[in-house]
Structure formats: structure tokens, C-alpha cells
Length: 242
Image (tube, rainbow, N blue to C red; front, side, top):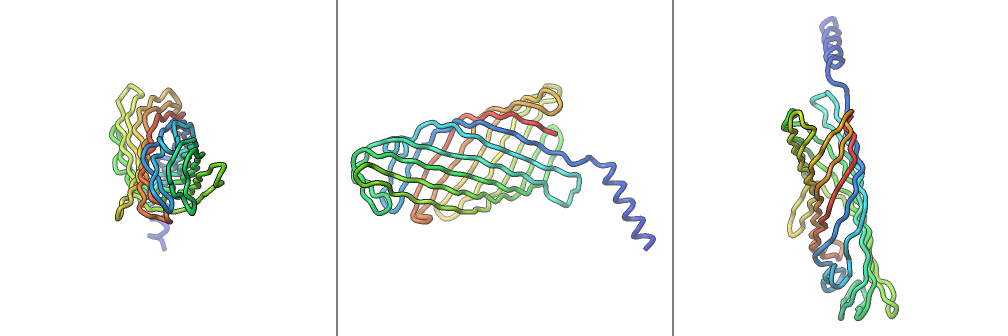
């Protein structure tokens, strides 16, 4: 009992001397443009030429919690959106149970939630985090015109992905360069979500971050959906590292 109590006191004292828990939150702006093809129970259509999807604005909310206990992973959570709508022209496009020709209106709304457990492998001027991520995607999309009306579909999926973040801090400058993302590939399906950014930190952990965000969504007949779409665009965020 004496040795157990002594060990507990030493552990408590060690934790009190260690760094307290910290983290980071950011609110980001994304202007992205999709390219590629999409099909639902039919033939593929070009999302730019046939669906008329162009550049759209959305936001990204990120949060990180880090603590001084080595055996426990740190936590990351992200909420982001990808929403696009447009008008285009098709010939004999089968979408769902309907075949469209002529002018159509289309839309996709995609909500993405990431929950990540990760460890700090390096933590100095070169930072490296590695972990596992669960990516929840909830999406709805439709095609419609005045003659046939609307044909729509929705799907939800949770995918396990590998997560990594690398950051290089430039000493005495406030500048850092960062690559962060998660990815999975299996059978003929691929998903990745990647940020490449530069950050400038002013004071008290407040900073600005800017760069690009790239999302790849390749599905091979998943819930009757076949897609090969790239979402790429400019990303900027206000960051507080506390």
C-alpha cells in the first residue's frame, strides 16, 4: 500500500509539472470547383458540362484537443460542406428510374464529419501527427426538369481512413507550412481529403492560414452510385492555437 500510494503521488506530481491540455480551433472558408463524372443507376454525366456545377463557397470548422498523457491519443474533429447546383443539357441521361434529355437542373449537398484519434510523433520545429480517422458522409443529389420532374438519391456512409499531419515551423518568423489529410483506398474506391497551407501566427496563438483543399471521391457502384469527382479550391482560415 505504501509503495502504491507513493507511486500515485509521484505520478500526480509529474502530471502537474507537465504541460496542461491545449488545442486549436479554426474557422475556414472554402471556394472549390468540382470536376469529373457522376452516375446514379445509369450512365455517367460530366458534372461541369452536363450538370453545370461551378465554384461555390462553404465553410470548414476544425477543433483539436491535446493533452500531456502519452498513452492516450489526442482528438481532432472537423465539420465541412460541399454543395453545388447548376443547370445543363443532356441527351438520354438515365438518372435513377428516369431518362432525361434537354435542359436539367441539378444539385448536390454533402455534409462531412471527421472524428480523429492521433498521436504526436514529433513536436518541435518539425511536427508530425499520425492517427486513425472515422469519416461520416451524408449526401443528397438530384436531377430534374419540367417534363419528368425530380429524380433524387441520398446516401450515408462511415469510412475508416488513415490520418497524417506534418508541419514545419520557421523559427523566429511566425511562419509555418503544413500538409494535413486522411485517405482510404479499397477495391476500385478512393477517398482523400487534403489541405496544403501556409500559416502566419501573430500573438497569443492567433493566426491566419491560407492554401488549397483537395477532396477526391471515387465510388464504384456504392449504393447504385458511381462517381469520380475532384473538389479543388482555395482555403483560408482564422486560427487560435491555445
